Length: 397
Image 1 (cartoon, rainbow, N blue to C red):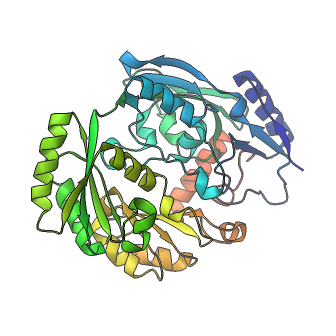
Image 2 (cartoon, one colour; image 1 turned 180 degrees about the horizontal axis):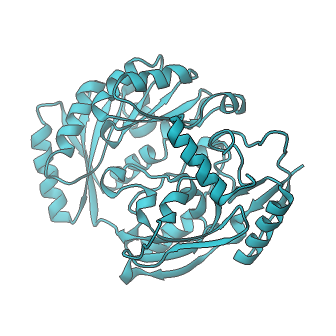
Image 3 (cartoon, rainbow, N blue to C red; image 1 turned 30 degrees about the vertical axis):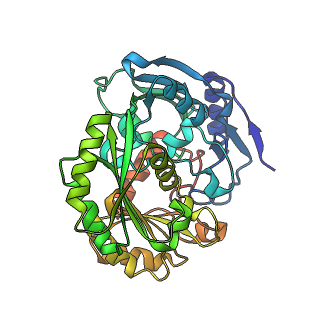
């Protein structure tokens, strides 16, 4: 049985991890545990994980200066609390973090978990990933040492930018305790231009046309007919292009975009409220919440996306990021990676699967030998006794 330690302060996290390091006792680092199913089942040879360090006790916004577009919060702060606070000030987390808890049969999610997994939603094509919005980070390494990187302004990095290194490390390098992020003004309104009835290849071409235009597209997705009901309640495939900003600008850009795309297929629009619901469904991967088949996230060359999907039996995809992100189902990881490698390369990540599949398959893209060696050296620097989330990303890391 795993004993859970629930520190209330940074000092208690330091104490807990210093003890674990001295005892060479592996620990699970978690917040609310909503993403326990994301990554490999943890384990490290003959050592069993007997303790968990629950960071949900480190909760609350410690600094929010809307006029400076800066927010600091403890890592265990519920993401919903942060989004509500910035929304009250007409601001947002621009990288649009997805709420993936329902994929794993849970609810909630914390700031630390989102940063640890480097999650970003449909606006990533315009705003970047989570790591691009971190100003500063405080964490405790596997040595039991407190480390701080960055600060509260954009131009604050000297030496190594540890914030970007720790973002997306899934708790294998350090336990995040406090995070400072930049926020941005929320758009005054949003409108979505819809094309209906396009096949995958035509949809990718239409999204590329829109994204390469001067109309400042903030998201582009394609939902094939198999998922139409789950996303927009319709019965036909839809290709969606989102426009955000001030009301007059959105109206003008939407009209121009409709004219640009009218030869591609039937064009319609979604108003602000309908747009928000549509993109929340895309962001949170709603078409794949139900079902037992393994779920993959592929990061690929957009123009190659339809060809890759054609090589995956029964993939049933949803395309985001203009085709650069593919969500699809498949229990055949070898076929997934072969298809990606054969058409321009990219990355395939197993987002949800049975524990047995996550144990035997490569959850994350296999690393070339030089990169794997570098990852091992970084792990040794932060966690020489391999006590933090051992094996969560790669065996031995």
